Length: 136
Image (cartoon, rainbow, N blue to C red; front, side, top):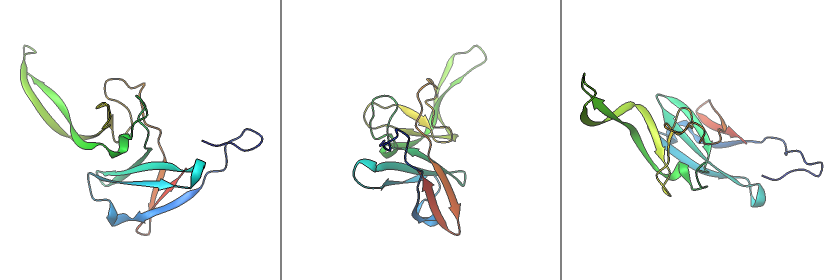
């Protein structure tokens, strides 16, 4: 991120990134905003009819997390004695999987499910009049 001469961050800017119908349920739009050293790539996701947006930088090692697979969370089913009954997909949670090393993030929080100290940087997103806008 660039800074101004006094060391502060430049003012936030809002971008129109597309029409609302460009992002179907459980899908995404990845866009690069700005130019040169000020450019930032953002992933915008729709899950349960809400939008979530994150900077496209994996907290693990800087990979393009928002461009990875979109999957339902995998859970292990257990019986009364805590023995495994196998794995199942849980459609109540949607994850993005970074293509570099497989780090997963919950799309509604941006956090890794097992390591909440690892999280994607959230970006403000709004939907108005059939358009999607992000502020960075």
